[in-house]
Image: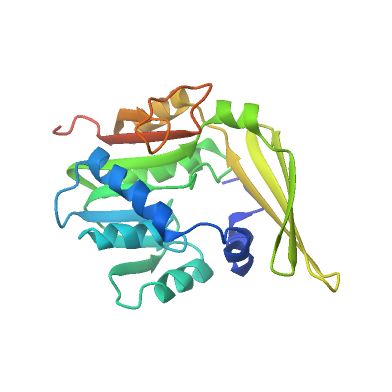
Length: 250
């Protein structure tokens, strides 16, 4: 693996909770309702939320009666997920999505909010898909919710500034070398500054078809949003893939 700067090890700390404070559980519940239909999840199904973050979707899935495991690499986000789950409805574990410390199998695996394409090398990103294939039960399905590269290119907001409490959040976005990058500057009233980078490889639908094929996965459905919108490369905000093990029972 050639990647020397693992941005994701620094960018998902306490400041992440501040930067993305606007995300709520209600929105996650609405998205989960659609996921259940697309994944054909039976009552009590075993579901893995791969890169669960602070656990919004994991908790929404658990509230629907599924046996949910949420996995993330960030101690901070897992701590926040545990705080939001006092009844311990979800099993929370720490792990790298390229080498999941679980044996499975799972009836459903979800990878949400563009939690894919973090690594510089295609081979490293493909390892994530291979892990999903390894962990899926026969007849199980996966859902991968990714950005739509064409939409990002035409709608990218290069610069924005906002305030959360006393903290100024300055975000600069760009497309460079096949990645969409966001550079974040947090400034406190006393002048203190903290800087972060986020970046994601811009994979097209055709790229996913090739990578999934090599990983032993088959894409069955492609959606452009959570309102069951048909995927349209020029106008869909999301690229949501639903599939199963290649050659498995439908």
